[in-house]
Length: 311
Image 1 (cartoon, helix red, strand yellow):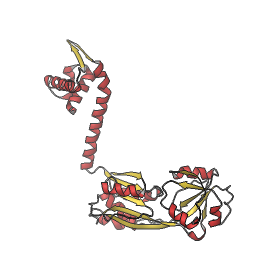
Image 2: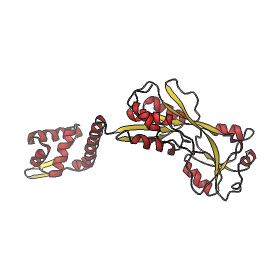
Image 3: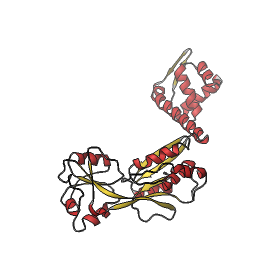
Image 4: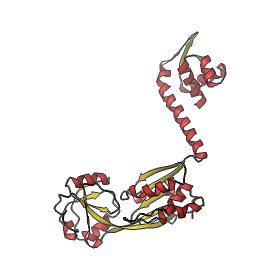
């Protein structure tokens, strides 16, 4: 099946007139007729019934019409996107985020590089750290932000961005809400809400519950779901301090700051960086990630070399 055959058929279906359809497609009528006939042969049935001045779609023609319309629209969209890419109207940037990494962390860097990279088109994908490593090596994503990760392949560049502590999130009505901080005994006596695939879970278990498992009441793969449950009084969340939280939740530090994690930026070593990826890596590495003093202007130092290949 060729696209011009589809286009010829759709023109006839629209006009119900071979002469006008040929004019619409800017081809001769015999050429249009031949194209439609080849399409009918490939599909194994007559699509158009033609008798003297009467032209109508057959039942098969009516059946395949919407599908062929979608086929042509999709093909034209692909062509336009390819043309935009060649003209650099689109600068794709695919960033992978581990489940415990909030998308809010990359918003400011993205906003910064958008000022200098025309046509920036960002796609965020979430996955466990091991899955993100595979996606990086397969070229499905350009960069990844993860928490504690082990056994990073030699082909992956690995930069430490910042370290953050964990805090407790709970409802203001929770029995622990008035404590200035929560210690090990507090956590052992309360119900915790579990984040599925949390990369810090082993560290939490080792630091606070070395002798017996924590009391997990509910779990979810989405931070917002857990926060709503915490706000409803179902338990306490142990969360990274950068994570955005509902206004209805109270934040309490953990005594001794026994649990923290390092947030790291990953990219494939030796690959030629696109301008978008090059800018993102530079901004992320130069940025002041501290909670109270997010850096502004980090891009200015990075932009002069934004078009170079990064090692």
